[in-house]
Amino acid sequence: MTFTFLNKYRQTLLYGASLAVLLFVLKWLELRLLIIHHSFELYAGGIALLFTGLGIWLALKLARPKVETMVVEKEIYVSPATPFVLNQNALNELNLSRRELDVLELMAGGLSNQEIAERLFVSLNTIKTHSARVFEKLEVKRRTQAVEKARRISLIP
Image (cartoon, rainbow, N blue to C red):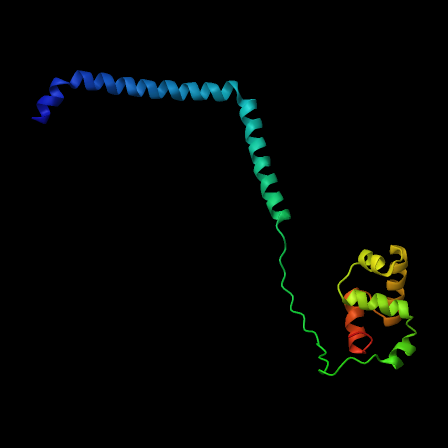
């Protein structure tokens, strides 16, 4: 039964297959001619794609944050639950003025230089000068270090 179907439509099937092969050959030739006539554009486009991909890769590589975990061990000084008593000897030894001590207490309260200046009714430059002198006298470089050392030697509660 299948042979009779093939025999009956043999000419049509051969004609369809030959048209498919001819279409394939024409498309292949068209592609070759397209490549020959537009070779510069194809090469330039390929190079552009290559460098675009390289640029994206490089940007992702450079922009990726380098996450590094550091473990910092630090001594914590815990003061007893007794009421605060100002260490007058340390205050005299460091030669801190009353205004510098006020600035140090407000630093410990978490206020910014501008907020300290407003609270003490002085200029911002005056607060910066007091802060620099406090850092120098306590032999520290940052506010957090100054507050920690002042608490450790009982200059502030």
